[in-house]
Length: 509
Image 1: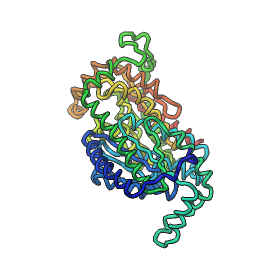
Image 2: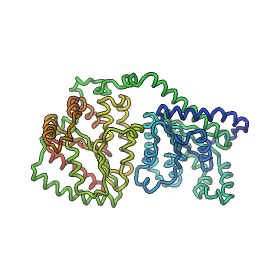
Image 3: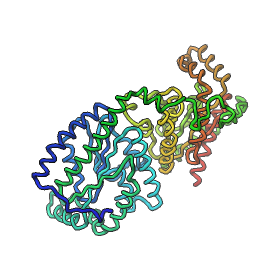
Image 4: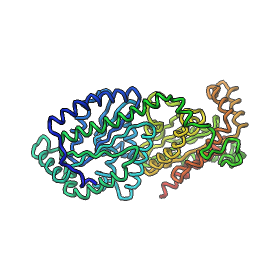
């Protein structure tokens, strides 16, 4: 592929000026349109060393309003970044709606420079490609415009540019020994780039190869690529706006409680039910509870320290019916843990900043670094429960969310994290009794709202959504644990036992 490129393409000054006189104002206008329409844009520059990434980024931003973009130079991972999954630093550098992020090198470093330098091991390459493709697919489906530009030069041109940089003390620092090593093994490194282009050239995030020997030609082609892509996305957004969001929502959503198979809510005998298998009669006496709790909390205290020493991250997600006992279970779980090594995130409705990003963004930002524990009181699974039932997202959005969430959890597990998800299960009568007890207790009245009572009216719809969620997103690396919760004592002990067992098993590996 790359060796077949015609790298002699060029523009003279007159041709360049003529093209740029048209493209520069056009790109500035398109940036304003993207901002008005809330279209987020990510532009990733890849290519060989000395191919001109920095130069071309500098040329590109001349046409842009500096208040609307950020440029990120992606180099070696920082110590903080090393303690997270490798895609974490890109999720945290994702532009909000209407903004542009430009990357001088990108998430592809993992399968290019790091792979060549053997920082990425052979058995990590396949997972790295899976993570990259999943990342691009998820954010593109959510409306992100991804423009990937590969600057191509040949070995001879690269050597010429390196020699020129090395000839001056002011620029010699820009050429590292690793750069020179890749030039000497240009063929091998080119094969890695060829593989990367083949494996990640997709409909939603295609590669644009730019012949970069002639600077003017490369600049004009990059402008044309970016302008054409943005123009298409702006027109697409305008068509959707003209059609009306209500019409699109109705077109995509269908009945909130209907499964993909088309089986209606009434055909209950055909539905899968994980929740119905839960034995809600399971219980402990107060004495049994206290005895087990004390032993488990002491174990948890010791294991928490070992997690930090071994740099193992832990992610625990809690879902369940309102008044299902999430808060009580989390309190007993963390009671003897070092507060410097864990954090509990209560997940509420997304704020304006969170709404301006992919729905998983706010969870990625809060994922723990190695050796720490993060507990989510409500999780990303709201997408396939409350947002699905209440119509806060379209049918297409919640249907694709199962894969998106599975992929995210796979990334976390591949980075060494223990991932556990708990569903706190109670029956409808127990929930009613707990609601009533909260209403009658002045110190707990804040826990009960009108919305809690309204949600009870949709119990069957939620039960159906939860069953589908459990079936489609319980995996060996991130299992769902249904916690029989009519007896709070039993539920708290089961959560502690599950977490302790998972940590002990990992420490034995």
